Image (cartoon, rainbow, N blue to C red; front, side):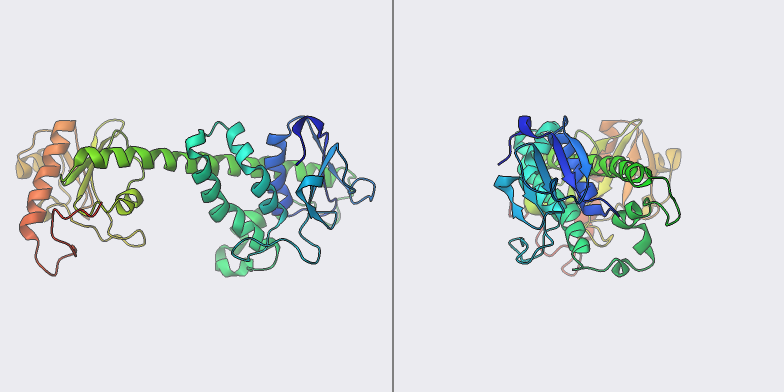
Length: 327
C-alpha cells in the first residue's frame, strides 16, 4: 500500500465530474492533506508512481501500486457482487484511516465504517455504475446528492478555462460538508447505542427507560430484546420528556400509548387530570408528554405504565406477556 509521506499528487480524470470521484477526493484530501489534486487524462500522469494516488481513471485496480479505477473489464465487485465505483474503492482502503483522523474513537470505527459504507457509499457506487437509476427516486430524483453535485458543472457555453477546476473545487467542499455531517451522525448513533445499552441494564425489568439525553433508542431496545420497556424518559433543554416506543421503525404504532384522558392537555389541566405537579403538556396523539422536572416526568411515566398494564388484553399490541424480556 502507498505511504502517506510519499504521496504528492491525487490524480483523477479531467472533464465532467461525477459524485464518485468527488466523494473519493473528500476522503483522500483528509488522508493526504499535503497532496494536490491533479485532474488529467495524460498518460504520464495516470501511470502509477510512488508520488501519486490515481483514482477513477487509469484502467486498473491495484491498491499496492496506488491505482483505483473501476471502468476496466474485470472491475472489482463487493462481496455481495455490487460493483465498486472509485468512491467505494477509496473508502474500502482509506475509510478507517479517514475516521481515525476525524477523531472517531477506535471502539466505534468498524461500526461507523460499515454504516457509512452501506447507506452513503454503496448508493453512489451503484448509481455511478448504472446499477440503479436516479429516476427510481421519482419526483425527488433531481434532488439526490449525486445529481445536485453534477448541477455544479459549468454550462456548455462557459468558456472560462478555469471553469471546470472552479466547479470541481466547489463540488468538493459541498460534498465534504455532507460526508463530515454523515460521519458525525453515525458516530453519534454508535455512542448512543452504548448509552442505551447501559440504561437498559440499569432499568432491569422496569417498564421505564431513563436516558441522560434525548438520543436514538428504538433500534438498541429491539436488538437487546427489551420487550418489557414501554416508555422512555430523558431531559431536554428546558424540561423533561416522556415518550412512547415505536413497535416498528416504519410506522407510528407504539408499544403503549399515553393515557387517552391526557390527550391535548397542558399545564393546570394536565396537572389536574394526572395529579402530578409540574406536568406541562401531552400531545393529542398520545406519543409524548413533558414535565418541568425529572420527578414529575418519572411520575407521569409510572402512571402511563399502570394505565397500559390495566388496559392490556390478549389482542393488544404486545405479543409477549408484560415483564418478559428476552434480552
